[in-house]
Length: 236
Ligand SMILES: Nc1ncnc2c1ncn2[C@@H]1O[C@H](COP(=O)(O)OP(=O)(O)OP(=O)(O)O)[C@@H](O)[C@H]1O
Ligand SMILES: C[C@H](N)[C@H](N)CCCCCC(=O)O
Ligand SMILES: [Mg+2]
Image 1 (tube, rainbow, N blue to C red):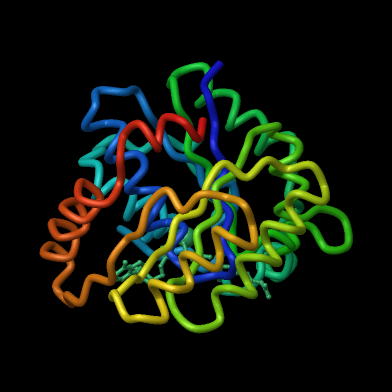
Image 2 (tube, helix red, strand yellow):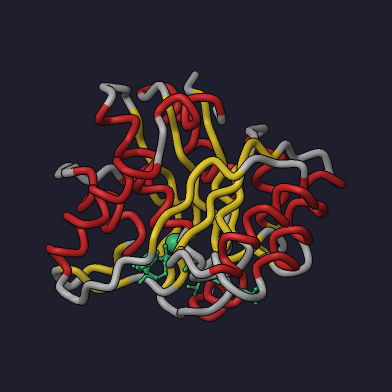
């Protein structure tokens, strides 16, 4: 069975997918057998007339993975809203056992599986029943928190880490994303490490490039610059 890590975010849009792709990239660069898993995608994109996970597409673009493995994304939903609501809108009953089985299938084939949630830690997958944190607990794997670099991140990151710890989820590290080096972003890193007692294992810079291909190339350089293989291996 593979070693897994759950990539939690302090919010939607903070860079979980960006960081997930980077972790897989660094592991692959060091010849490790790694796969990624997006249990539930809401706000899927149309590709060749089929609704697919944009998060998995980005991860594959970064990692030159051509093959599509259905197990990498258990549910792909149309509406760009919370997963519980997107599923309700399509009349889909999310079956948690299917998610756990997809993870197990990947885990049997790969040595490392990087799992991305949706939004933040208390986002519902099934209304009033099942949340992202339930999935982390059911998968029984530790987590890394991806946080924004700028103003507002201290509070969001501390709340996420404290809540996770309070229910027995182990946080192995924090990744700061969208960094541009301003004085308050530098200080945020120190304050976050001090409040949470968790190490910031990578600081990913903001990439200001519109062109998709150039963005991918720049992202790879950024991962190589700011993600250390030893720190990445330690979180699993
Ligand atoms: N370091 C960065 N530099 C430039 N753009 C970035 C960076 N990180 C993320 N982005 C962009 O910001 C957007 C949100 O990032 P991302 O998709 O990784 O967020 P997320 O936390 O995975 O969101 P979701 O909850 O929807 O899964 C994307 O368009 C992504 O390409
Ligand atoms: C649609 C979005 N990009 C994510 N896939 C889902 C984010 C759910 C957030 C729910 C919430 O915290 O209010
Ligand atoms: Mg994402």
